[in-house]
Length: 183
Image (cartoon, rainbow, N blue to C red; front, side, top):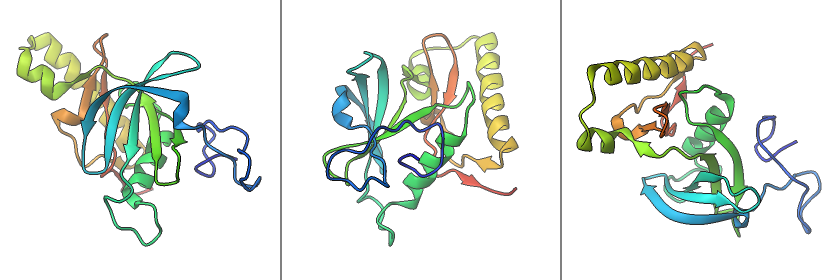
C-alpha cells in the first residue's frame, strides 16, 4: 500500500504513531530542507529543496488545497496531476518521485526532479541556433508523443511549462490541466 492508493512508484514508510495502521504514512516534508522559492502559481508554490538523508536537490511543489473548492476536500486538479505524473515515465517529462506531508493534511507536497531552467527565461536571455531549436523541438515532440500514446492531453503547453536541465534535456511539467481523453 501507499499514500495515493495503488501506484508502486510512490515511496512510503511505516505509519507514524497515532495513525490507523491500515493507512500508511507518507514521509514528512521535514526530511527536506527548503533552499529557495522557485515559482508560485494558482495551484501551488514550488521550492528548490534538498533531501536531508541523501543531499539530493529536488523540486517541492506545495499544493494549494484552498485554491480550488472541492466537495471531496482534495482538489481534483491536484489529484489528477499527482496520478498522471506518477504514471508517466519518460525522459522528456518531469518525474514525480513521491508525495510527502507537512504538519497537517492541509500541507501536501509533490517531490519532483529538479530541473534548472525554464524555457521562457532562456528564450528571453539567449538566442538559440537552428540546430539547438531542432533538438529542443524533437525532445518536446517525443514527450508529447509519449503522452498522446497514453491518451493524455497536457492542455497547457507553453514556454513556462517547459524546463531544460544543464545537459540540454527538455522536460514538460505542470500537469494541473492535463486530462485522459480516451482509452
